[in-house]
Length: 307
Image (cartoon, rainbow, N blue to C red):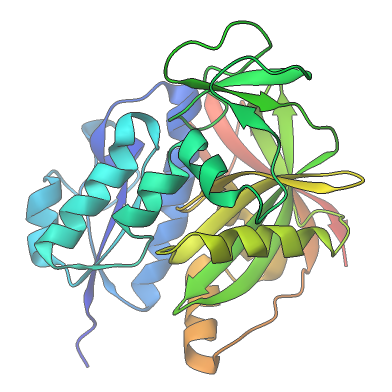
């Protein structure tokens, strides 16, 4: 039986040249996306520097779409890249295995997301002006901790967001036809707001997931893999929604024995699935041998606990 064709795309591997320290995360996600070859014939292209890693040659986005039945893309929210590429998928009439451009219009913009979630989900106070409490200043449209600083002036195109304390978590969901399936809860490793890695799965209070689920329920058009960043302390605050694959997903196969592609297939086949961890994995951005390496930068996976 012929498999349908899936176009897989990660922006740093297939599209724009990015700094090695950033591109290495995308390289890891693109490598993990190859697991979809079990269920689809894969279509893609890669930048010249990655052709020794993968069997794909050169090409372009629109040509790949023409060959594909479905598309799964990973790209940054910066400059509306993820939103605009998603619109191109929709206009091409190719089935998008991710979230809609309508949802991305909200989740990519921290101010619009705050306006959507406030009074419905527990979120930090956010403003286009300085706040009276301790706060951080963030670009409205950005990802990965870019441009975040504590306090001060709030320039145009930025927001002030109340600084909340607690454990930094990311919730990984699979969303399909309005059903929200929790895949994993991960602890984020941050330094000066910059993403340095994660622990998969996290040790956490089970009630924290409920707030993240409510956030996903509020935004219409979320689909496929959805990540929710939150801070869990005496209360749980939802910080942002990443409507795309996120870096912790590369460790799922090592932590749970099944990767995202297989998790998705199990849910589609059975209507639900529960994923029990086999081990706790620490994912680190570092140097040396690892899951992937790009220049001097690596994604390293370490087992820190067996269950």
